[in-house]
Amino acid sequence: MSLNYEEMSWSDVRDQFRKWREETGRHSEEVVQLWVAVLEDKVHKTGNERHLILEQVIIAALDTARFDIATQCTKQLALEFPGSLRVMKFKAMRYEALEQYDEADEVLDAIIAKDETNAAPRKRKIAILKARGRRAEAIKELNEYLKEFMSDQEAWHELCTLYLAKGEFGKAAFCMEEVLLHNPHSHLIHQRLAEIRYTMGGVENVESARTYYSQALKLNPHNLRALYGIYLCCNYLANSRAVSSKRKELQKLAQWALDQVSEHTTKQSTIKNNDKLILSLEAALGNMEIKSN
Image (tube, rainbow, N blue to C red; front, side, top):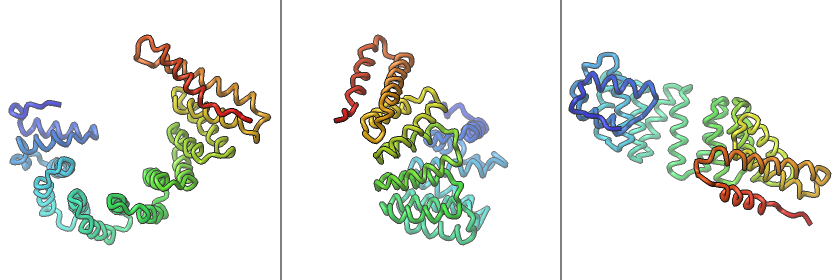
């Protein structure tokens, strides 16, 4: 996005900043450039929006490693709001961006001591543990955090990711089941839980994966990953002696999933004359089938 700074007044910049905030867009480089070129010396004219603008600039400055600007804006806020937890949060963010993790931890601990119900600093401490490569401690802290903030879906997602990185798929599946309780209509959550169950292997887990893939497809009929998943699950189960009585039904469902993949790919592909690619895809999927003895 190109902006002509020379033709923009301070009010134009204020309005542009407001628009970006309402759109929840960061636009960090543009924010910093407009701040330096136009608004830095005229921020006092922005009235009630001044504090929002200063916070916006702090975030943008940290994103772009302009720590001098972040420090300057944080000091302005600190002078007006001494002891503010919000200002302390920005100080911690600056330390974290500078990889001064011990100092960041001290500030975050001070925030938690003043407000034990504040979830944000607790999550930042966990992020710092991850950044320092202390994954086991991050998992422990995240479990403690979730005892107090059980409805935090983002935290459950993060804990799932940490468990997956350690190969603890059963615990990762439990985390996604917790997320599913809060958001049962998300096809992506069903899909991820299915992928974890399929990775765990075994007839019971693959059968569970097929169920979750099917629900994901029901919620979003255009979910190709769910169709691939159904195909793989059905092939696995069809060649398992444990469910040999359902072999024909599973093979039929696998073929249906393959046909749906082909149909969706043909309709949605932007590649002209892609029939050969579709045939290659079908052949590749067909080669995945495991033959039973």
